[in-house]
Length: 31
Image 1: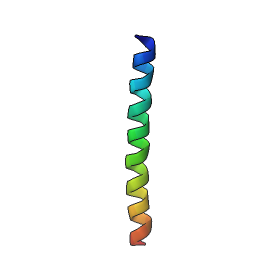
Image 2: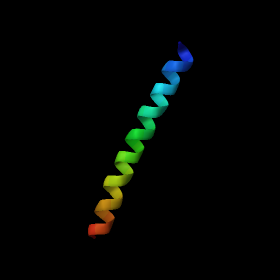
Image 3: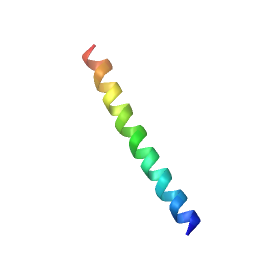
């Protein structure tokens, strides 16, 4: 169970990083 929770947390963190990266890349493109 602990490993499953860890994997889910990792996926959420990766999704958040990807979302932030996309938003930041868009901002830099507009500049």
